[in-house]
Length: 198
Image 1 (cartoon, helix red, strand yellow):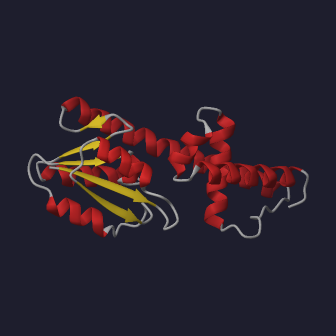
Image 2 (cartoon, rainbow, N blue to C red; image 1 turned 180 degrees about the vertical axis):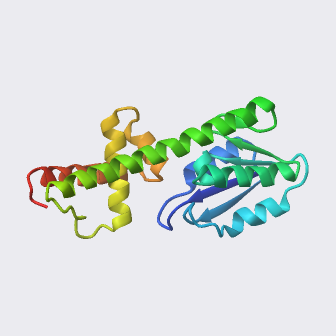
Image 3 (cartoon, rainbow, N blue to C red; image 1 turned 90 degrees about the vertical axis):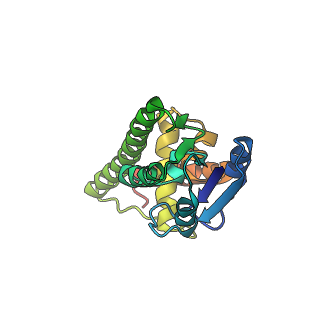
């Protein structure tokens, strides 16, 4: 049996993109979750792993839908494999049914965690440098600290030039419109910090 698992981090995000992809991959049943990947209590995922039988598949859209850290991913995929089941990440080209797929999973999981750490380090380094110059940044009114961090991450990815806005939005779990808005907010905040307004 092919089970799909779709997850978004917040209640206002949409699962349709993931579900459409999972249906293309022939999923007989799709379990949905609207919880942060950092939240270890994921009842639908736990229920799904409990239901697994030998030869079954769990299919996700991307690795970060299953877990947000390398340790978490390895533990979850380990649980899947202990049941004699397999794991597929459609966007990352990973299928643990083969030795090559298992090897690829470990490489991709490591790279995904590395990329998140780089973004985090750059954001923190930028904030530290601004503080050293006497600029205490702040978030715009009406936007949470978490949203401002997402906006800063989106701007960093955008300025790197490796990904387009659609890809950045997919990576960060944002719609294209929200991603554009966040990038503009982060640009505006960066410019104000540069002029010593913040």
